[in-house]
Image 1 (tube, rainbow, N blue to C red):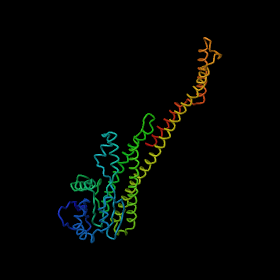
Image 2: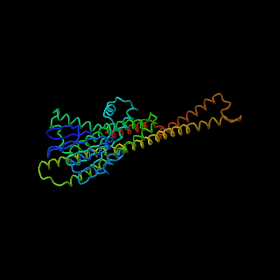
Image 3: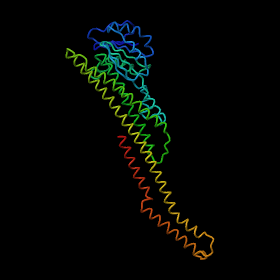
Image 4: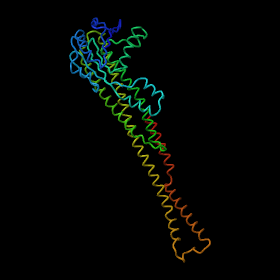
Length: 385
């Protein structure tokens, strides 16, 4: 368990328990724990919460914090608020490698699909204490711990990265950081689905990687469910925030308004990700339908060509069958020019039928195929935009 005393004057990490209560009006405590270490640290944590906040965590909420499969949700009590938010498990280096083009097509697809996997991060927000429960090796905890150390050393200006003023403020910053990971992931999903769409609609390719397409659609459905749970949890938090009693001082009112702004910003980011995921789902479905429509169109072209060839050679077969009968009195049988007359007759009939089918546009498939390809290319360009 890592504990930080966060205040505008000084930010420090305390290693040894018990920790003193934060001075009145001068900061708050942030306790960050690994989920695997929560059971063994629960006793000292509950004792510290009794000292700092006058109450501990409810047993049901402790079970929620230990549950790795729990979806994003929000709950509140008289003494604290509980928010569970699911973050991406993909490492930042892996996402950067995928976005920079350092992976081949198979590795890129595998990285993107694995990036949709999520882990739950729990937040218990007291008036003067923030308790966070992270999965092992969580980058969010390390990122904000390093950020607090950097602020303490003065490496970042307060106008750019202001120190959090309350536990709720720090929680919203962490949630916003996690949502930014979803915003970065959507570019990779767009790139992968764009590649699949091009392969699906390419008339010269024989697409057979249907399992990858199904996995991608499953990842989109999973991401949509995750974002919907996140939106519901943040919306409930925002509704509860609106019901908090009015602060007497102007400074506290300003901090409350900043919390509302940060909450709306997080909610807007989640809705952007959710809207983009739904657009990609519709785009993927439309592309599959266009693939089968184009496949049906090519099949119709092939069948039309075979039908025209059959119609052209049918009278020629009739002529050869007529002159192939074993009768001695057939015309042109004993003539030296009979074979040339028959060949000329068959050539005239073949050219006449070919010209007829050409005028009826039965043999104009190349032009129509070019028109269809142009329409498909324009549709793909609109989907990428």
